[in-house]
Length: 285
Image 1 (tube, rainbow, N blue to C red):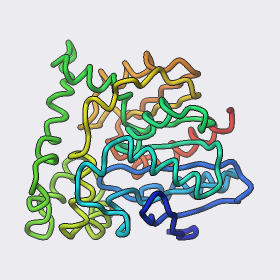
Image 2: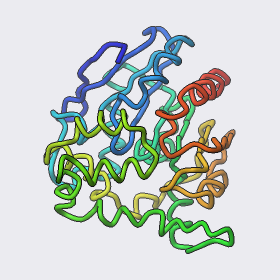
Image 3: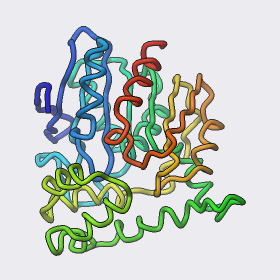
């Protein structure tokens, strides 16, 4: 992976991160999801750097070996938001562009809703606004058959204590099968399992699910930051109902892009198109 590997301190933990681009460029913070790492941005970061941006992709809490508490309470959304702000503070960034995928996207919505003064733009990849997600989950199957509760049922396993044993057994057969079924390419599956293939690492990643709370959406006002939301129609985890409802929770300039024929793993599967949209969105702010 190109760029410069650096260590960042946020709170009492040290995080590994990849930095690319001119330090004089507008700053961009890229947040990965499960079971990814900063590596998921390996094709996006160079494109943004070539466009003049200064980019930072950290391995987040649970993924960086020196930032891996075992208690799910240490993965509360408010703490994860403080981590992200700490990354920006460590870089000396007062205002920055924020991009998040999957859990990184969920975190990005929270940061934008609670700290809009820190952001230039917001881009969320795959993950709908949290209120749209929970409303779609509670609504049951829609007229088109979209059932967010069914799509999200895998989370019950992820949240169970000891489920890391299932993912680690037989050289990660459960992990590998689940990720492949969700559309993740074999190279990425192997890379992420190589990083998460120990009990401590897998627990750290799963603790994002175990520390989550539906109440995280409480008090999250409308998003006022210029926002790009990118969703793909072959996403097995996040359906159209919540994706299309997301715009009603954004009061600022809003753009919704659908990648047809693309799975949940947009940064890995469609990085060129995503990068082009990011450059356009961030450049227009």
